[in-house]
Length: 248
Ligand code: PGA
Image (cartoon, rainbow, N blue to C red; front, top):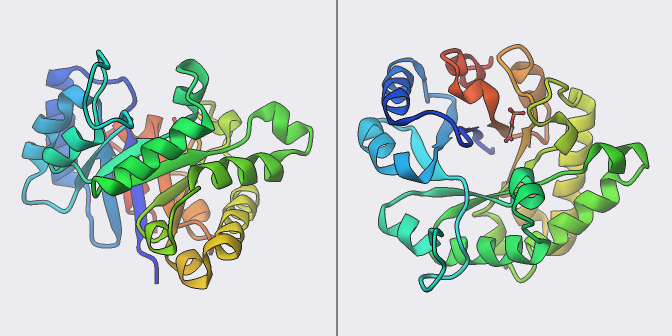
């Protein structure tokens, strides 16, 4: 039985004071009995958020990392640095990084492999644009992104990753995928993993849905058989986030 996981993606939001206050509020209100909860916060807040949440079951994650361990990459943060801070999760290949920072499928794969090597859990994002969906290419795009992302991973590696299906057209738009649309693609991802890495890997890998998840739609989305939780942007920095986590 896969445990649900709800990951908040704060993106580039909240200054230090706001992050501190919000984390303290979340510490009081979020109940982690039924789902694993992760806050993926800006790099500069990782240490503070982690120390406020010490003693709770809420985990902290980063939103990106470089694939090299160290070196002359001004402005970058490595997986090794995150691991040394005992940050267990890292989002890889978010569509905003693919679009605005031109991250390629190859880089996504390198980052995910490095994250695993460092003992981090990569939350690997894949998903089609509106244009791709309208032209009937959703399945082929998702298949291709997935194949690239998990290239060279073993079946054991697969049980340690998290895949987030995030249709680009649903991110930050308020236009959520229907539960059927989200389930269909999450099921496809599981089938692809079964074909490439076997039944056990497919049974164990957690597949999230992301894109305008809110307290109103969390229950119907997360109740689908192949959706193991969500990657939540806008709704994760609102006081009502606990309603997304405790969606039942
Ligand atoms: P959203 O963002 O919930 O604001 O649509 C999701 C994401 O970008 O991960």
